[in-house]
Length: 202
Image 1 (tube, rainbow, N blue to C red):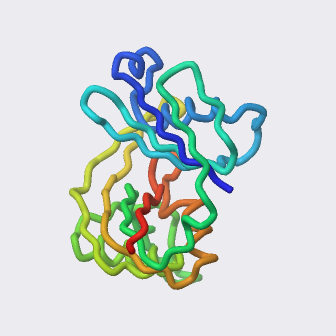
Image 2: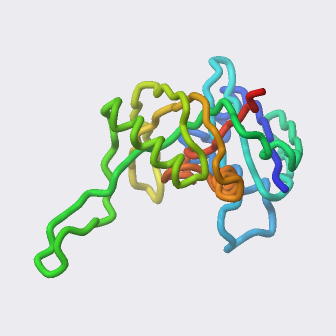
């Protein structure tokens, strides 16, 4: 069982709440899930700038408690929604690869640091690989421009690469696909990445 919430927040209200980046949004959204201190995040989100306001999409395993800011609309996702073979999809992702370094004793290894992907062919290969890991095949796909997304966490400034993918996918492993829908695609999910938006294709 899962829930999709749409939250509309005016620009002035967002400024009052100091929602300056996606990490600040993440912290604010935690308040919609009270009594969960110490537990792992169980939601995905994305924030879209709609000129006069922000639109937040929030996918969660638990019903969120609407807060005293913004306009909240919460809907339960029907179980049958994830039973279709094909979907149009959109996902705002953080496409990266881990750097490889030379270790004399172990040979090549990954050191955990991530490098953003910018090349169009490499981006297509990245989303296709993520699809294979997530129980689906990418039939059609286009990628928007790579944008630098900045944030502040623990008084330190950081950045992510942000790319919007959209296209058509075909499910080939429903159990894996359902898990990916709930847990997200790619890294940096706490910063507004990875939420797979779906529309069934007849």
